[in-house]
Length: 378
Ligand SMILES: O=C(O)CCC(=O)C(=O)O
Ligand SMILES: [Fe+2]
Image 1: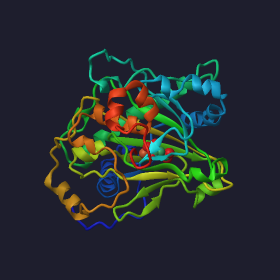
Image 2: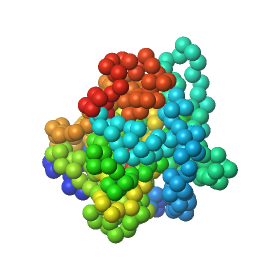
Image 3: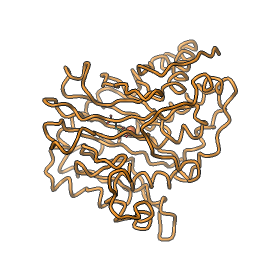
Image 4: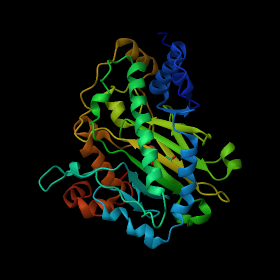
């Protein structure tokens, strides 16, 4: 495997799922080489022609404006404040990244799961549980559409993890060992209003610079304004190793796939968790909608003990270098804690109101001074 010194990336690579679907061995090798480059040097990629059927995605996307147009009392009825699992509706401005308010309104949904937590169990075992959806009488068919979508993404996510094992030349099972048979995966449906809908003091942070927590995230996004989408629609941006922000505009029919901090930790930073953010759409623009899918790993998984990565892959990392400029501060706790605990810290920091209600002890440890002030949370 030739090792070339990699420059900080200036564009996000595209991987073509057809190379896997074709069943031709040389196509598969090409996909794996593209994946290896994306994993080691970028941490972000577009995935085109995925097996998730476009009509299903279109069906889900068609619901989004209707979902956000629901009367506030319907939204509040499924407020995240009701949920120790941090699932449900969050009003605009309820979430924080790096201590600053995010200008986005969102619903957190998840695959169906019954919470096994009982009094006396560790707090983190309570993190997964029954999701909240608008009832069918309010948004007919929505729950089923989301669940179908989540099931397909769950399948795609596992296929992707197996391909990552192949791309990194690690033994089968080295990454899949971090999943239980019965898992819960989460997605958000997010609306980023344009600056016209915000006050001057709200700023332009859609979501601030951060790493994602798990192994993989798949973002489906769509701008309602195709003209802006074509070139300079500010939106998702990805930070390269030199600290520069590289745009990742929506490309029809693709997912943006990115690597989370748990995968970075378990691969000794061979796979890069890449900092990203969303900038508020500019004046005159339509809102930006996106649906990130967060593929979880088992709550009890510990990723501090690294998997065995062969020398030729470690050489690729060496060629890339470890010097990284980043604006992210989150998820460093993977070095010592189980995944569930790390995720819970992240959720409490992002949604302090929910954390204070359901996890008062942990909340006090995280925010000893009380409600978070700028700079104390992420
Ligand atoms: O909305 C997006 O495109 C990305 C959102 C994101 O990075 C997140 O919620 O973790
Ligand atoms: Fe993210």
